[in-house]
Length: 146
Image (cartoon, rainbow, N blue to C red; front, side, top):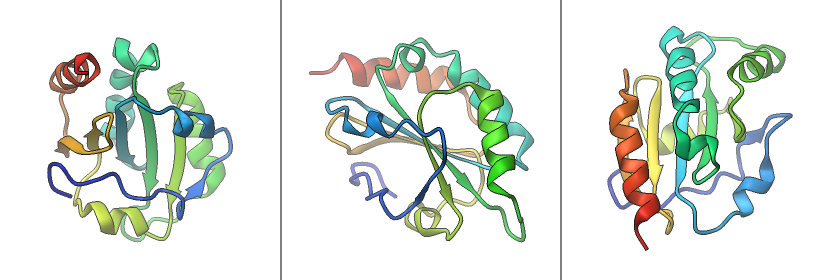
């Protein structure tokens, strides 16, 4: 995905139990798409830091957490759900078991983060080890634009 690309259709991806699908109906909010994996140690740490960002806690942005299966990884849905319960991030939870979205976004490492504006255009992306400070700045800028 390149900057200004439109958010792809997420309907072909498996929704996980506990996912807050009603968030997808919230128009006029930026969307934060995060690809992660249960076997990625830095993903859990990064997601906990993201949850502390005020714009995410106050629901001014829609977080979409997409579990991607690393090469050769066999993970049950219960393991994924257990990890999400530990993270306490309210959002939309998807499992990209067929790599449909992974192929569209074309990233190599997790965590991979994509920030879309209110019109669902990609405005920022980070792949691999991430800094939450830069994400927080970008979120504030997008939320405060008309």
